[in-house]
Image (cartoon, rainbow, N blue to C red; front, side, top):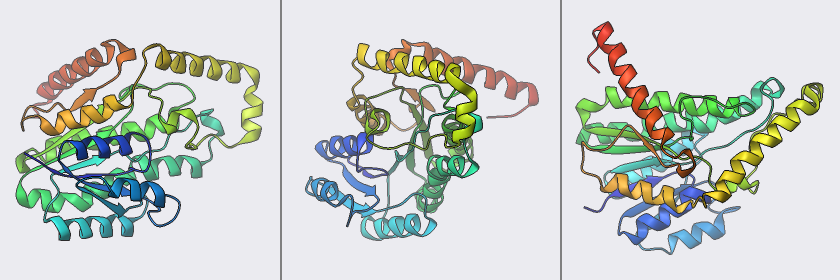
Length: 287
């Protein structure tokens, strides 16, 4: 069955690929992005020319923008079957060297932006007792790496939303999935799309060459593996399509798509779920 799917952050990277992939499969895609009439006008026109694609202005950091985009889409289509929270920002640097404003910028997009879209779409999904929300997460999903702490923290917070909503919404027929994407050569990782990085230059200098060398070694390892395993962003778009096509009730809470992890991500997700289940039983929770 063809679906009506709203995807955020469709001007580049995964979001653009997801839009193109779902369009080819005959789904109706509401391609949401900022700047449809200025900085992203060209890509907005490109996507709008695809079959079944409707481009809408949406800034996930603005309450008003999110509410208006969803109200417009619901008025036009009557309902939204699937929401894909793809819009996101990355960030790198010494944690102490982040100003709180930079950390807030990461959370404004990666956490509050997701919460805004949930609040905008849930009333209509609950009324229909049907819906699917897919959130693009990060490869680790449950542990952090040095020099990426604020970014990881914002994604962990999003994971908490996904997992908590999965329990709270189960009686309303709404499923929630997070995709653990690993490292892919999108604009976010190649430097084309600027991230939210540590900005206290004096603190960065105080950490000296040791921190710089460690950060560079980690980056070399990550990007080296990305090349070695020929990580293709289309994998994520195909994963979103697979989740949409799955029968209701069979979708996993977490959906790792990281070839570099070589199965360790699946192992981590499984063991984490098993431990949580045992913990809940000890407390007498029925989760």
